[in-house]
Amino acid sequence: MKAEILCVGTELLLGDIINTNAAFIAKGLADCGVGCYHQAVVGDNPGRLEECLRASLMRSDIVITTGGLGPTYDDLTKETVAKYFGCEMELHEPSLERLRELFVKFGRPMTKNNEKQAFFPKDATIFFNDRGTAPGLAVEQDGKTVIMMPGPPREMTAMFDNHVKPYLQKRSGSTLVSHSIHMFGIGESTLESELRDYMESMQNPTIAPYAKEGEVLLRVTASAPTTQEADKLIAPVVAYICKRYEKYVYGFDSATLENALVAELASQGRTIAVAESCTGGLMAKRITDIAGSSKVIGMAICTYSNDAKQALLKIPSETLEQHGAVSPQTAQLMAEGVRALAGSDIGIGVTGIAGPGGGTAEKPVGLIYIGISSARGSRTVELKLGRGYGGERSFIRHLASSSALYQALAEARGQQ
Picture (tube, rainbow, N blue to C red):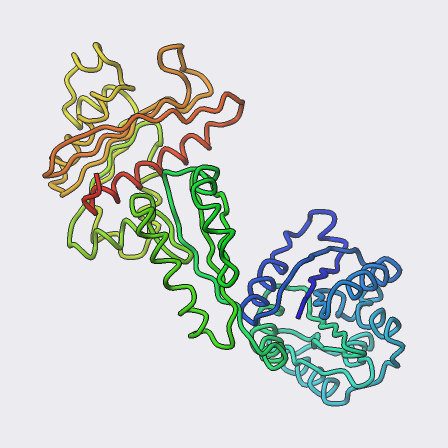
């Protein structure tokens, strides 16, 4: 089955509201084994809605709409769908009674226009709204189905999970299962070039690369009658990729570098300490965002100035004068200094030039040094993250913190 998502609401077109519904529904469709090949947004206009509906149903078996089910005059999704299919609108008494009960519960009078929410195209399947007043519904005719849900995400997500998903699963007969392999330190183009023949040879499962900020995600997707059978198809593909790219793989299925680092350190009973300059505490912030991080990080210092580097990390003034704050020597001493100060297993030091000013021909904007210290010894990594366009300070800082997290993870795993 092929499905299409059609989100209704002028506020979406104006940018007043971010359309999170489409992403949620697309993931839910994949779970049900239903392919989604098109998405669209249309305003609260019956003529344009009917035009979009007609085009969608020419391409797809199922169209899922959100929005336009409320009590006001411009909530016209049901009416437009009924007109398209040539269905009469009729009162659904159980929905009307439930509306009355809800308003009694709210302690508010039910105005006449709310009755509009209890009218549906004849023979529609009704989905009760567990978090609001507007029910959802499905209309089927001549092999085509339109499923309508309310626009507020809080209402829509509950309705989809509790009512729409079971409705779809009965009709699908298969399920789509995806697992994501998260990598850092390899570019999307390099990965795609090396894996292209392998990816093109795959029919079920399939492999698709996605670029994130400084990262690459490989999504492996299989279709099968059950989740267990799909997982069996996926397992050998994931094993092959992970073995081939062991150095770069840091996690699976919605992982983050900080999640992976905290989990790895916790499993080993080891600790980390962080000294940051150009990242201004961003690495520490990302680590401490993770629940349970207090077990693995006991100290994080933002030594932005040279005075702080000398006073807290005991970096000799001669080092700073001879090599500068942005140097491999300083980064290494930052890592060693914070590790000694905290008594931790791993120390990380980050220093660099985030811009937009401060760069030179010798040390351009985006030059970053990461120091890593542990019982195995000390090392430094040099990065050149500048892209030469304005407004990249936040990008450089984020990518520098990601690189430091990756180096810390590699050190914890003994990969460097």
